[in-house]
Image (cartoon, rainbow, N blue to C red; front, side, top):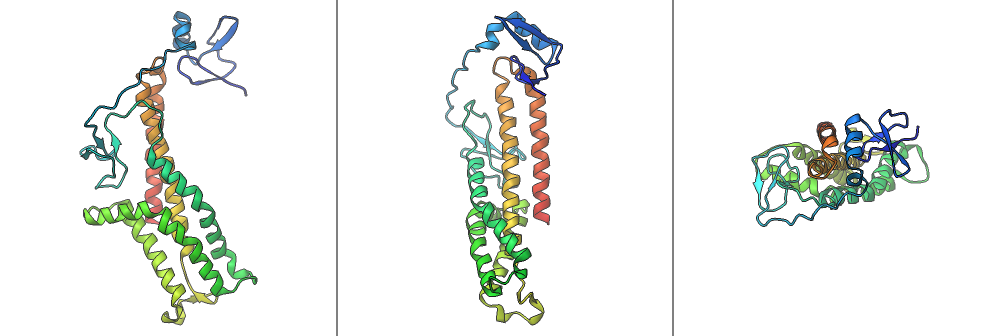
Length: 273
């Protein structure tokens, strides 16, 4: 069904909405009688809103953790307790994207094909005859190395931080699990003869390259969705100061907060798995 947008709050409005009016030969539909009343009172305010004045960044800006507000820093970084990226206490009204979100998205899309290839080789490679078992194991190592050593590098930095601060968290689990799976598999690939025969399966010592790669990709995906939700929440709080945005700010903020919480829980589940 076709839909339009309420010019006051920006919400999607169905064509059969009873709240509508005409202005300058055009029909406008609204989500509620309140939005219609505001529009009828001052149509120009919502058809051609005045641009918001740019807000200059104040010197001495501080950054805090969304989960641990007691953490305050003068420069961006990660929380020493949970490893989440710190956010400005007073965010800018600009439209620039979270640099961590940009970085994680870049790492995810560049290494996702590698993770999928490793997964396919691990699951179905033993049924093929076009590549030997030894060559397949080395190929899995080559494909997994960029995923673990480059895409997961921020995870290992947070893992080291959690160890140094004696504050185990989600990144402690992820870093330990991915590092152990990849490290063991590298040894099993380079020196398979040091392992007992019971470790062999399908003609080779069992390796877990696909587990390491898939965990990294899923964690990156979870972080992208979480950071996106947090950015939307910040956008909602910033938008409260803009004309006509007060009606949708609270609901959008609640949805963004629920999304953040859900993906935080999913990322924890991946780490525990």
